[in-house]
Image (cartoon, rainbow, N blue to C red; front, side, top):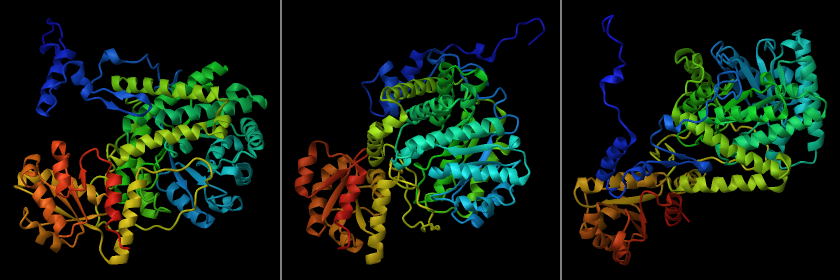
Length: 627
């Protein structure tokens, strides 16, 4: 460029592209994959993905899809951040969870974490954690004026809070410098236990704690609005948000009714959400949560300074697997990244072995170092709202907020959070959502790496010391791997009883190019149920399959080939397998018009992408298990 010439943007050298041009390119790709009827908007729609809550993710977003302006960081509606500086000054709070019942061991893990990068302690106290009387020993050596303490004490929250406040005073640190959350959550306790006998008294006790924090310890928050019980019961992102809003509103009513001003009442709440490996959904959920709470605070008359939601994000227990738990490191890394990018002030990355029992020292180190890398090497906290401005993220934030607000209104219309829990309305809604997701998991539309996809049967099991049983009696706790874990446990029992895992013989028909794809599919499918796959080095046919099947030691078989080869060989090979003693014969692929022919020849079931894998594997194990 010369001084005289106007400065042109780089894009000026390229012709403008429009949406129709992009759709035509999509049509070409779809035609190559066999989809010929989709054109124009229908071609674009063919690539869309349906999420829960009625949200549909499109393959392309443009400026036309942008939602309403999200505002500025630190100002209503707080979509972009709860503070003007976001987390750029000191990063987010690295918060580690501790669930030991032995105060001495809890203290060892607390000190190890604080000495190696953790900035606050989340301690389970009372039922399922250290006893209230052991809180002093668990926090021995902790500088309470430097490290924030968050309590999770269930029904013992009042006693645990009093003990922690006593320890602050005894340490010589002024209460005005105390930081953290006392963790009172009576409505969350109702969701966990289903017991509302003491709810009124618990709400009154929580209000008294809030009054004391307001006057004596402004850096402490008395109440936790914990949305994890709803996520862990199978709820969707919008359902998690809606129930948290209803819980928060219930607490505002209690606190203001006890005499607190609305600003002080808002400042006494800390919201806790699950962060999953669906990074964009997690980012949008946290942004939507701040927007929704800002609206609630505005309607309640709170000032903008008090309307910003304080968020604690915890990596999801629902996504954690018990088989091949090492993959959990990847899941929690993505979830922790999403929580930080989404703007959470505090983040807890659960150790990769948390689903197996008490985490060991290595797992705890990996968990805290995951956040250290995100903060100190990836510098994620140095950018305020890194996802902001993305048409996709802004649109997803808006859609999620609207779905959550509708659910919140349903709860309020039913009489509020407590009434909706008592009536079973919330439990019923979450159960329906989980049932739909369970079907997706069973059909592997939602794959689980290391469990339903790419399982490793020879992976040595990882054992951990049993963790304290969590409180129950209310909403259930679910995991994505539940159905496959039951299948794998049946396989383990077979191994213990017979010395070998259940086996299926994979009968590869025709040339390599004809059977490789379905052979890999079938192996992946059966191994997800703990069923060992056995095959010959080369293809088999009707003459050789009986001898090969006998050598395999299996009782069932699965044919693997292309549709063309099936037409030539499947019926004869299936009949030969039945004659050789196969109690069940599967065929990898959809049968199409030849179903009756294959069935008559001895094929008992057809396995294909989208079939109910859990049902197929369960019925396969039924005929393989040791009596």
